Image (cartoon, rainbow, N blue to C red):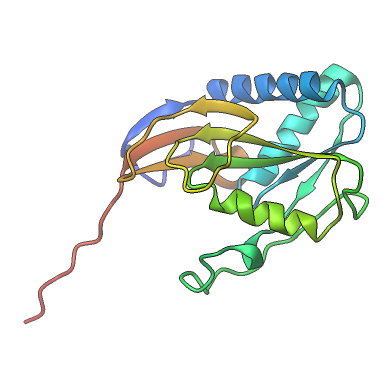
Length: 193
């Protein structure tokens, strides 16, 4: 296993097998709720939601014999914290077929926290058409919602403190699969002489 860039800080809450099981369960839940894979699009939110959407689509394909479309939806310019984080650069939006009209769209993200990213995703999605339904699938729901947003499909509910950080690592971007939770590292300020 590659070296964990976070060191052994915190505790592991999901390993690669746990993540695989969670994604398989989410895929089955999506199929059951949608009654198949017809008119289904999975859109991952960058960064780690994109490979998660692709993995879920592949699992749906294993069951249905047809891999539903998957892509990405950039929410950068729709965020309400853009002034606080102006260095964020837009990511790529890739919507198969170019529109979502009449489709069931499943937004996929790694961690659901305040709900603000999902609100931004709903605004961004509205600029690409009018879906028949929008659902939300997340690998981890850590609580602490600030907006009335709830995931339809959850890999793991992980009660956490606001002072904790949930770190999702995926093979596609980090070289290994793992979810860890740790106390936030607060930078110390050095006294000036």
